Image 1 (cartoon, helix red, strand yellow):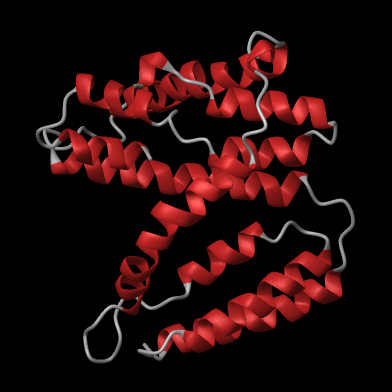
Image 2 (cartoon, helix red, strand yellow):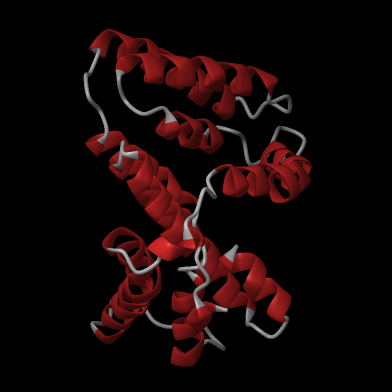
Length: 230
């Protein structure tokens, strides 16, 4: 969603769009790692070993630069079941499957790009809206309660402090530099846009709270209007 808003603006430098895309990927990847590490109740190692075999097979298929991705997707589905059976949340298995889809095949075409463009309409116009509305059991009267206020604070204040602050430190300490055509106003705008996303907030909230009323508060905080980011 943040990337879509930036693209619609039509004025942002290309380097800024690349920066935001990288940020979105790493942000979701970090949330996925947190889910895998902190929401595992009981670990069954044998299923993880079976899952590792599937990962090796997907790696082998990737190295062969195949042009048909159905075998990798089938292995990814089996991987999802095995990881789920192991007690680890299955979300990381989907990320791993995506990593093993070849960027280019032996004829120079990109199976990953073909899959991305093929799925985009379904993701944008079906999957994400259904996910949002399915988790939108909101009570507006609860907006000022601690849980929704905490979610909003994390998305509004936390994202801006985290993204802008970390970027500022890495640049000033000499670890990197701003891309050509990008200034600090651009970076701050991206840090504000980063808090528009809500999927991982709802996902982690659903894992954190078993009480239905608290989960409604999480949904309210994640889907509430955030005027500073509109």
